[in-house]
Every structure is written in C-alpha cells, then in structure tokens.
Amino acid sequence: MAKVVINNTDSPKDSRVPINNNFTELYTGQEIVQASEKTTPVDADTVGLIDSAASSVLKYVTWANIKSALNPMTTGGDLVYGGTSGVETRLANGTEGQVLQSNGTTLAPSWAAPAADFLVMQVFS
Image (cartoon, rainbow, N blue to C red):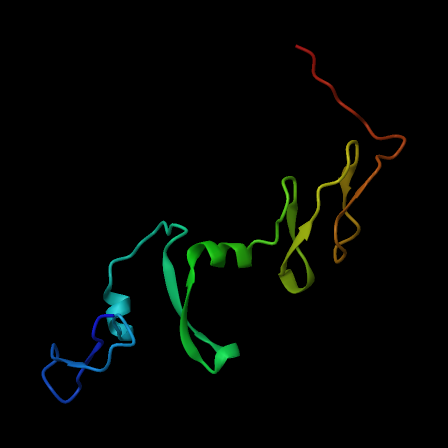
C-alpha cells in the first residue's frame, strides 16, 4: 500500500508528513470539499465511513450498496410509499385485477378487489 500523508500544521501549508503503510491516502475535510464534484456516481464508486458497529474502524461502502440499503423495493411492480414518519416502505405488487386503495390519511395503502360499482374504461382504436 502507498504511504499515508497528512497536512502538517507546524509547517508550511502544503507540506506533508508520512504516517504508515496502512492507508492509501488520508484527506482533510477541506481537501474533500475542494475536490471536483461527481454528479453521477457509478456502482463501483466508494464512500468512506466510520463503522460504529466495529469500534469506529474506518471502512468504505460502494455506491451499489448505498443504493441497495436505501431502496426498499425487492420485486418488479413494487411501490414505495411514505410509511411511519415518512420512512420509505415497500408495498408489494397486487394480484391481477386488484386496484390500489387509500385506507385514510395515516394508514398504509393496500391492494383490493374493485368495488361492484367500479368504473372500468376501455379505449378502442
């Protein structure tokens, strides 16, 4: 691995001091903010994080895993709605012929058979 360098606050602004061989490089917050922006991440891109479940060890996560963790959908036809406190919640696809219905302002939507007086429109060309 490459030698790690950090900004040395006791020396001129651009001087760097080697630390050890355990990291590829270490960036300060200012360097991260000043880096060029990437507006469209791809699945292989990585983001650093402090793992609170592993004694605050520095780790990374891929963009693919971030998207997966934020996306509750698992199957084609799934819908996402705002669940408790606005948390994204998965509603599995209904069965053929069912319609999506509201169950009130604070309750989850659901799939149901249409009512007997349900109006079906069909367009012929």
